[in-house]
Length: 263
Image (cartoon, rainbow, N blue to C red):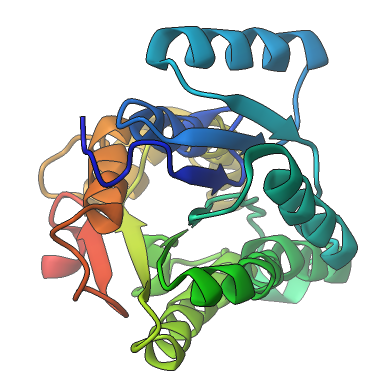
């Protein structure tokens, strides 16, 4: 267990499933108390809280904030501070996807993706920074995507938002460079999460191909290793960026993409 992270408080958005849950669990394994966030069945979330708390011996709370709503993000951070004492680590992970050609891209979907995938990241950072600066220590990890570095057809809003997340990451890192607060981004390649599984069917329809072809030619076709990025690897990277050997790593983009962007 990492002694620096023991008893730190981590707020992970979109952490009731998928990548967010994997990152939250990795932090809990290092002794971090957790504030989970996301949508899902109430009983299932209670069961998840109980499992994580008992398995890792940490406090695990939950807040259902919609990160696209500024006032709800503020309320969530305030709840974390009142319940767990502070927010030492913020992992911005919540995200959604919509696949459509630009000329057919519904305006409400464009607004929805940017509000969750980009504005929600800003809201969270803005809410936790004052406390982190006051304490002289904080870690912000933004889960971006390889689509923050490269584009794909039919994903205009997602690509635009993730490029924005990387720019925001660098700006925050510069502003906080002497405050003991680091801000970094992780850019995974394709991870087989519920988000990606739903995306497979949408992409098949948009491109007029089968779902199997999407898996082989569109998703893994771009990753030279020919395998999905492992959630456990993302969790390990997040732990490293929050740990004792990363204090001078800030404004960085950590790429876990199976060689996708090396070509």
